[in-house]
Picture (cartoon, rainbow, N blue to C red):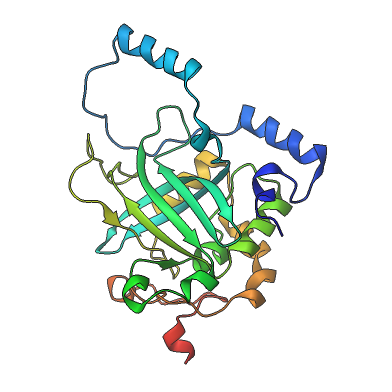
Length: 264
């Protein structure tokens, strides 16, 4: 399968998908998670004029290829109580590699706060043990319904998630923009933070999840149920239990989510 079809609508094809995407872009729910006001003076008229000229005259070719929109959640690996809702704008480079820029929301005012690279299980298996410590597993995000593609027709989103089963992500957050229950920084401070994935129920704080569901009008429980048919495609993954000690209360297992070491 040519993965570029995810972005073009050819995945399930036809004018109906294109029309659905067009309608969603006009009416999609707006959501901004940043809990701060960035430092700095308002734009001057001169800067705004220069910005307009650049927009008209300069090509933005690399950015125009980022045509897949996903929303998920990240804890920081070394500080799991630091949790963020991440709006991913992604480009599928080839069958095994995707790259994403991360924002605090989907509004014109959203703040760039990180990057993520997504690789297939096949590429992950080529990595050294040292390198694997940077790559978090994705199966829980998929089977829990907390990784979503807002605006995608249900069948298209389902097929996309099937393609991402057993994948891994390498994520760095460069700006602590905050969440519904945590304040953010006015400018990017300190080093970039390596993010991880949630891998058990009750690790992600409920207020962060419900805030996304409310604003984007998404029912993650329904998505969890609808993705059960994908469980047979799941393999044990590395890194599932990395944050287990940080969340001792999160003991419920989810079908399709298993740490490689437990499977041996």
